[in-house]
Length: 267
View 1 (cartoon, rainbow, N blue to C red):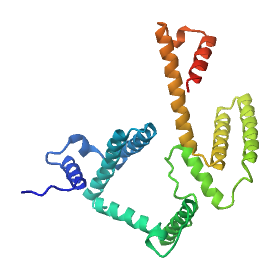
View 2 (tube, rainbow, N blue to C red):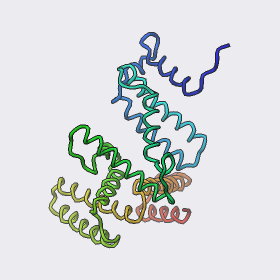
View 3 (cartoon, one colour):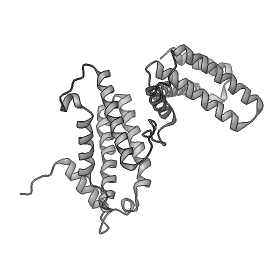
View 4 (cartoon, one colour):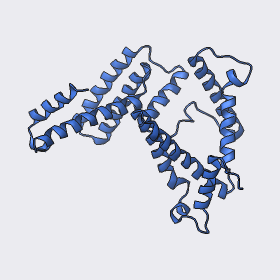
């Protein structure tokens, strides 16, 4: 009797077969790291969405989809003799052990905040060693991906800068800066210079993100929650109109405002 393989090895075999030039899937065979990357990002967002919705069956399914992305990349790397899935697993295992000295070494941490402090210390050490090996000058900003969602990246850039002492004294100072940036945006709008308007608008968003960081809030998460709230209320407005055999375009501005306020009372 053939021994049944563990699920992860079954998945690795499936991916290997899909990428087999002899009888594999034409679509899978055409892919490379760059073409698969957008799907990897999309699947991570779908995991986050399932978590936000609290749907555990969807969480399980979306985590599987995300795992497939890791297996897909690892299979392509194996074909090019770059690395294997086992190398990926070993790499993250080694990293987790190194970044948790309070668990795997003779060290201690008495709070989650203390753990994060040690994590960042070990992470900085890894980065410094990498830079030394390559003979390069390093920046505390080096490990923040360029293609990360802009608001999330702004938050991370600010956190890194704070570690170097580049920080506001208190959150009220940031509010003053927001007022300053809004004034500059108004000036840019008056000038009619679209490039200047774009720049100043970005400054407003970046500074508002600083408020969230100072308050210990995740701006990306806050924006997702606001998007969900807006969508729920807007759909409710559409349903109210539909009940009257109308669309939002069929009613006046004042009627739309009334419908919006009605939805606000529900959430």
